[in-house]
Length: 343
Image (cartoon, rainbow, N blue to C red):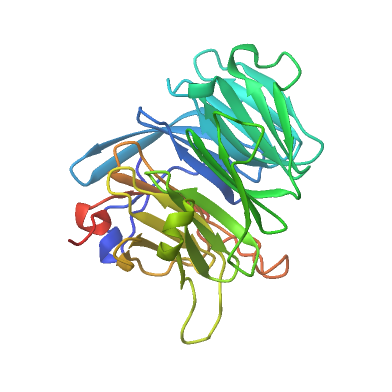
C-alpha cells in the first residue's frame, strides 16, 4: 500500500513515501548500482531493502528484505556490490558485515577499534574499503571476506568523518579538516593531502562524476567546490546554503550527491531542505520547500530518474531538541529540468 504523498510542495506532488522500516533516523540511503533496489540503514541498528519501479511520474515500492542478524549498534553506512545481491554494512559496533540477499546469510568481514562510518565495495580492485573513527582505512579482499585480516591498513591523522570513492579516485576528510586524495592504483599512499578550505567541521564529501575534484559540505551551511589538479585551482569556489535568511540561523550540510548523467549535484541540510545545483554555471537549478525535520541522507538511482531522501532528526541541536516528526524515506521522480544544466 502506497502511503501519503507530498501534497504541500507542488514539485513533490508525485513523491512516494516508503513503508516505515525503522524506528530511528536514517543514517544512509544507497541505490543499487544497476538494479531497482534501495537500501536504508538506520540508527536503530537495522538495514532494510526496498524494490521500486517507475512508470512515468508514478513510483511504486515494496519492502523486499530486512537484515536478519543485524548489528549491535547503529548502522552508519552501506554499499552494494555491482550484481545487486550483496550489501556491505558498517556500524558503531566497530564491525563490518556482508549480507547476501539470495541466501539471507550475514557474515562479519571487518573489525576496527572504533565505530566504522564508511564502506565502499570497489570491485575494480577486488576490495571492500572501510573507514573508521579509529583513524584508519582498511582494505578487505572481496574473495576472502570473513577470513580475518585486511590486505592493507592506512593510518590517517584523525577520525574519518566523510569519504567518497569513484574508482580510481578516493577522497577522505578527517576530523582535523585534513583532506586525503588517493589514486586507488596506489591504495596505501595518498596522492595529495591538503587542509580543507572550509573553517568548520566537514560533514560530507562527494567526487565529481569526472573525478577531477569534489564538493564538500560543512556544519556551517557552506559548500566548497575543489579541483585536484594544481592547474585548476582558480576554478575553486565556496558558496553558502542551508541558511535561514529571516532568522540568520545556519544549518549543517548533511549530504551531497552528484547526478551521474548530468554532473549536477544535490545538497541536503539540517534545515529540512534539499537543492539541486550546477557547479559549472554556479547556479541553483531547483530548490524544494522546507520539510518539518532535517534531511539526513540522499541518493540518485542508477538511471538518474529517481531521487531518494530521508527525513529525520540528525541531532544537530542536541538531545533536548530531539524531533521525531515525519521520520520517513521518500522517492522523488526526477524531472530533467530539475537536474539538467540550463545551457
